[in-house]
Amino acid sequence: RPVMSMRNRLSPPPRPPRPTQADRRALSEQRIIDAAMRVIGRKGTDRLTLSEVGAEAGYSRGLPAHLFGNKEGLLLRVVDRYTSNILGRTHFALPDWERGRGLKQLRAVIRTWIETGVRFPEYFQTYLILSGEAAREESSRMGAALRARIRAMNSQTREELARFLKQGKKRDEVAAGVDPHHAAMLIMSTLSGLLTFWVLDPGAFNLRKVTDRCLADLLAQLQRKTSSARTMRQRDGPS
Image (cartoon, rainbow, N blue to C red; front, top):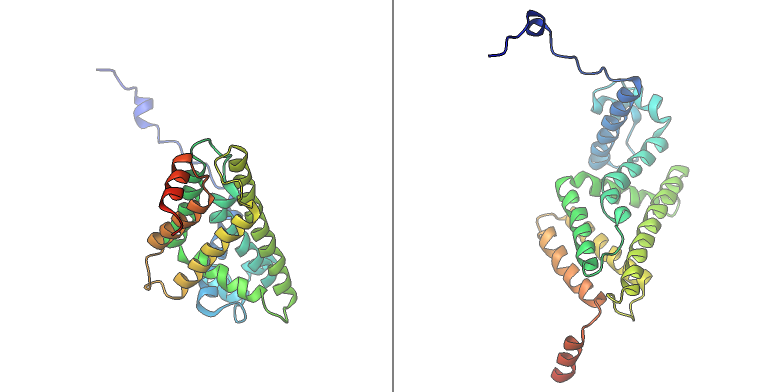
């Protein structure tokens, strides 16, 4: 048997590197943003205060103001968190269309979005509340800033979906008559509607199953019909 030296036997295991100041700041910001989402879910944005969010996160009441400046700055970071944690995994991360797999890729991406929302419903709930704040007719400066951020996020999502569908048309795997921008809007509207219904009444239906059925209908409209499918449709006549 190998003989272990006394030095090796007595040497303590290496210590993990100490967190840097940047690491500690990032962790504090993450916890405060998570706490803000919990507070928003309970009482909306009007009655939210930075001191309450600090206490909810387990920090001093003044730390959120130090890190985010004001309530507007914190809420904008909450929107950014939704963008990176939900959309960053799906719509904004659509790959290039793979021949023969494009619609399957799209289905998988949307399923990931739904699955993340089911596991972390506070993200969906917070997004809807902040969207309502941004949609107010007499919007405050904070509401206007939220509107601009959410509008940009939605626009980016639409453009990314449209880009993906354009690639499918070039590969002759999306029906020639499909307008990619219209189809992107239809997909987003369907998902947003399902999201709203589910957040308001999560026990009313199974979000995963209903999303799959809606997706099947939407993707069937996008798919280029093969010659055999056209022949069958012509033989059977109009429904």
